[in-house]
Length: 167
Image (cartoon, rainbow, N blue to C red; front, side):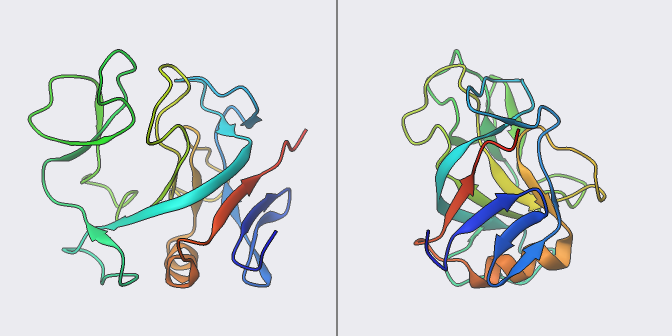
């Protein structure tokens, strides 16, 4: 492990010399992640990008890219764009990145099942804002908004998300 790594623990996410409270997937941590299971996948995941809503927040890092209207994420395992960012109109199953709520105002992308997605292994695992403390995600890792911004300002492409089996 390096000082740039983000390590999930029972106390929260360990990064930059402290523990950051976070929530994980409703399916807890799973070594055999599947689409729709709500689990956070165990493993070592690289940080591969950062997206933000320029109409809502300032650019969190110089390498962050804006989320525009029509930006979507394909979560259709039967489609060739599975687990990739796509643009509307997109007739297959997807998730809107530009949401009405603030959940995805800042999104840190991991390389879970990317760039060569294995169908059914689960689509994107993001680091994003939580709905509220203790409220589980669909598999992502979520933080208090101010904590997420502080983490985003400190990570680099050398950072990795390390998710050990917690059971």
